[in-house]
Length: 454
Picture 1 (cartoon, rainbow, N blue to C red):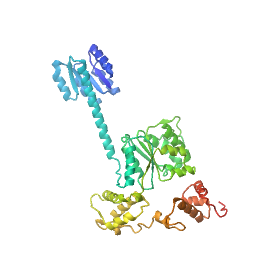
Picture 2: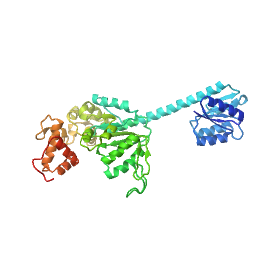
Picture 3: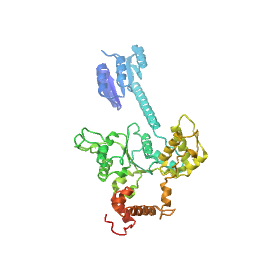
């Protein structure tokens, strides 16, 4: 703890400094109020111990000016018995306490200890209030299903840590909401949460977006730019769709995770960063490691704490709660009721677009509703016509109950047949790199009936 001691009596000042330092305090001793203010401008102190009677600026004026410079500063004034009225006035002006001469060492030390303990409690209360305020910003994660509760219990356990998290789950399950919840429940909640979608930014620009660049480092770099890593310093960086990152950037990301340093494009020296990394993907990274499109060492660095978000199909018990929440958001002033028949239809649907699809549907029904009760008539005409899960089960050559391997073989073979066994066209049709398609063909022993002339 750092104490600033102001007293014009040189011998008393030296004695007090010695005794306080003997008790473990860091003491800066000055001879008057002006010197005390100079010290306050350049250093942070926990407590000011000052005589009231000093030439020039007295203790009362110093008290007011010191509190304006460092509002959280605790002040104890030293006074003669005859000037107790002044000391009482000082307490009214914001001093923590006063002590009258002559005083015992124990009395002084006890008063200082009380002041510093009070300051500590104040600081803890401020931190707690800030934390509660930040937690109130966290998005609402709604659900009572077992699968959802299991995920929430993992979030509660890991939120306060700085461990790297890999969030997996189907598209539309709410991966960014989970990432934000982890951030706002953590000790980094007062700093920034920065998100970037690695699939939405062209490869040539992604490196600059992540790590920043120096002016003139490439054509178009007209000024220095901080990347997302530096913008998230002290807080949390969320890397969405991390599985789409190119191989050379994967190597840079691995270094940033291992060493907590980044290299902006064109920079001469690395930049240290202190942040938490949360990544997310709807791809199977383990399979991408096997086919060589994702680095194995990076996968293990990201997958320190895996959090899987269940699909809406796995948590159908949560649909009524989610519907009510989305109705409240879309129509906060009008009470909207959902008919049992409509809810039955919603519960029977497989929700390939997950929570995002459900929210969009509810918003659409609210906007186009026919009354205050939503019924099946409020469903759009195309509701349920596109269902990949159902369509996959009934497509030709695929039995109703299908294994993942059988479905993948059928999908790859169908794409190749559609494209005349031209692997380049088939890869484009499936929206995957050509080498991934070739890997799948080898994995499942899928051979073209004759040379395709690819």
